[in-house]
Image (cartoon, rainbow, N blue to C red; front, side):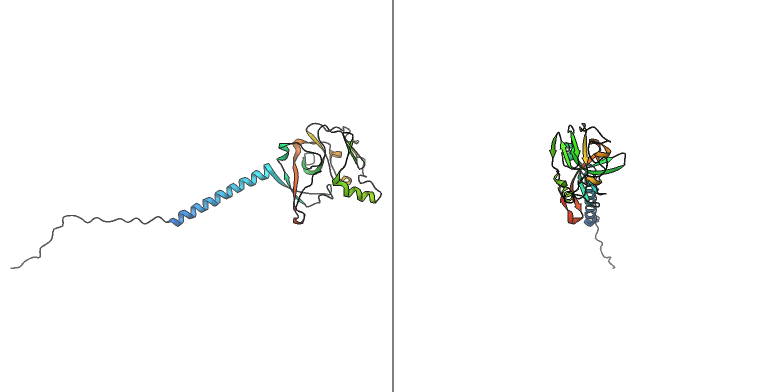
Length: 218
């Protein structure tokens, strides 16, 4: 007699296990870092635009009109917001645009609205009182040592003059002269400067590095 090996019946099916691999963390972290860098750069760019166009601006001195206090090639930081807060003051160094000449000037505030101004030789009078100009002392002393007047050239060297005979500074304007009175195209030739044309106040010399300093006003 031949016997067959008995078969053990199965009562169920074995379930298959599905294993999901863990997500790759490296790619997500890298993407996050890239996003943070892009965000930081975008914020920096916005700040540069805001600072450049609304708060401060660079300016390069071009010409001898402000010597010996400022020289050609010096780079300045101009405060563009200060005159949105208050009016210009005597002795402040300002940068303004001259539409007729399509360029920017750097000069010093001599008169503000309501001032009666007279400039004769090296003597400045505001509202009938003589005013000292300490920023011109070096130049005036050098001229005196030579037996000269510092402000000694041209029919329009004084103020008022044949170009502008109104000696009271109108509202909404300033009177501005260069420190180098012998060689400066300023309010004696171009007239009063409108507040709307003032770009701001020169506050810092930042180049060349040997001359880094805050600008002295008055």
